[in-house]
Image 1 (cartoon, one colour):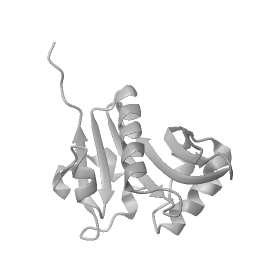
Image 2: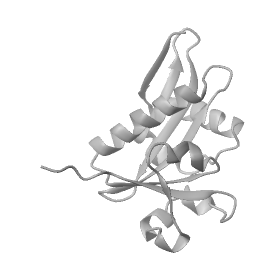
Image 3: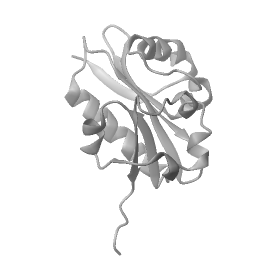
Length: 151
């Protein structure tokens, strides 16, 4: 299979929204953050088969959002690789804390995300258009904190 992971462009927005709706995921606010989205594109079919994005809400705080894979083309391993790439991108952008909302906490725990209480969520995350759709009890809020390196 000929797949490529690349940065999303404005022209990808409708295809990303379609993939998110197929997965019953929130697409609110994508247009504001499209420059921080990745897509997995099937080169032969010129079809977006995966996506994940970041909302850069503060200099060092962000929100991982919109992880979606078309199961006809991609599996859990591909999802894990996409998360690894997005976390690397987030760290390169200077993010120290990355929050997310998920119904699959065990998947993200593998990457070092930890569940957090609602009262520990920063106001800038709560103000995000994506987070505004959060319904407590239906998803887990998690955070990834960049490990400090000794040196």
